Amino acid sequence: MRYTQYLLPTLKETPADAEVISHQLMMRAGMIRKVAAGIYSYMPFGLRSIRKMEQIIREEMDRAGAIECLMPMANPAELWQETGRWEKYGKELLRFKDRKETDFCMGPTHEEVVTDIVRNTVKSYKQLPLNLYQIQTKFRDEIRPRFGLMRGREFIMKDAYSFDLDDEGADAAYSKMYQAYRNIFQRCGLNFRAVEADTGAIGGSFSHEFMVLAESGEDAIVSCDTCEYAANIEKAELIYRESKTPPATAELQKVDTPGQKTIEDVAAFLKAEPRQLVKTLIIQTSEDEVLAVLLRGDRELNEIKLTNLLDVDWVLMADDDVVKQTTGAPTGFAGPIELKVRVIADSEVQAMADFVVGGNAVDVHYLGVNLGRDFAVSRFADIRQAVGGDPCPRCASGKFESWRGIEVGHVFKLGTKYSESMNATVLDDQGKARPLVMGCYGIGVGRTVAAAIEQNHDEQGMALPMPLAPFQVLVSMVNPKDDAVREASEQLYRQLLDLGVEVLLDDRDERPGIKFKDADLIGIPLRVTVGSRNLKEGRVELKVRASGEMSLLSVAEAAQAVQQMVDDAL
Ligand code: ATP
Ligand code: MG
Image (cartoon, rainbow, N blue to C red):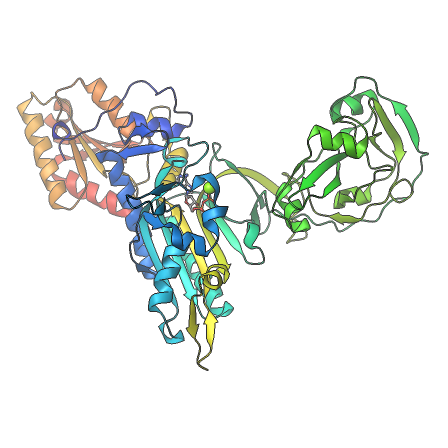
């Protein structure tokens, strides 16, 4: 491709609404342009990376035995009503009517459509296992679209769905996909972790998220510094090997704590550490229960763990009225003593004695508080947020390290949730109808390219790894008006094309400074500069974008040498 015939609108300035580096660079390098909030056009240069990502995914999915198909964006409401998701999905589901007033939605995911295909075409266990995938545009009316392709409303996803006769088969399908995902992200040259994830409402089954490690990531994850364990913070388990309650040594004592509101304030006022306090949260559940939850003063509640523990749809912090009704005091002074509601405590609290709690009255706290003696706990459980330094639940010696991550992929064992609600069954070898056991597996295509930029950039611009870079080599013609330079560049360009290398020829009549700035910004992995001084000695200059390494190549061997470097990097 010739730069002069291409559309590569680079920007000097960073667009004001681009918060993260990948969004800034994708805009500045002319890869994407915004059409509406969370809706982008893929410009020619960006589309090349997107297509490469898709191709890597396709190859690994095919290799794992999945079969490609393509389902529609417009989904009839009927199918979504069968699973109950037409009502449940909420506002992310973009609904619309056709001219006959029939309800439709834009598919945010395709369990309904694919299950419909399979129930109509697969009748016998002999047709299993089956794994259907597509690479397709999804629409989710995200509440906060942001970060460019990272969280769009319209975005490309690879989604795959496996169908098996039994759990064993479904587990095998899951591990094949898990391995395929590892291969995909490895081939992209990404630093990632596969982490255990919460399975939410479906429960019981298992799920992993593939996280690209990056400061800008929206997810918090922990991994063990010794063994393989890694988990989303929403899920990360904590176990307590010591949970014996120490004996009480202090008397219960009521104290005034005038004007002290936060845990830190109260601790400082009482000359204690936040970890010697127990905080009491008043919680409401989807089942209309109000309960008190106790945590060590310096810990945070993990609402997902609590939701799962209580087996409810959601939990939330009670509002001021409910707190007042429950504790008799405004929010901020709750404590477990003489409380009339169920009390659930984090396991860590079980090992505490002589602690401080709220007094259920303004500016009052209790000191020397002890479990059992002063109040009762109906249940101890792991309900707090894990943090770096916590002990690993799997191995005896490891500690958690904490990271930020971008979720680029998700593998999920669904079980029979969809096959049962949609009556998708097959006949087993006894002629008996059985619901299919399903799995679903997603990868965000644009999000993965964005995550790769988050991991591969510097002050000057992006440096995408070879497998995802829009072009492999940039040939920079320093002065197109110099005949020798032009001829040598043109020849190198043709040779590289003949060798099957993806090459962009910067044949613009621009100052070298501008060309080099653009080259660093768009970050094509290899740059060959053809300039008159080196050319007189029969040489061209090679620069590796990621490392900045420079070397000279002989004109005669340049094309071969470059092709070799490209091959080595793929
Ligand atoms: P998130 O928690 O980030 O919203 P999700 O759990 O809703 O993700 P899935 O339904 O598992 O995502 O979708 C599969 C994959 O699709 C995700 O791993 C992610 O890579 C991608 N994805 C999801 N939502 C978006 C979005 N709004 N924009 C771009 N990619 C997305
Ligand atoms: Mg989402």
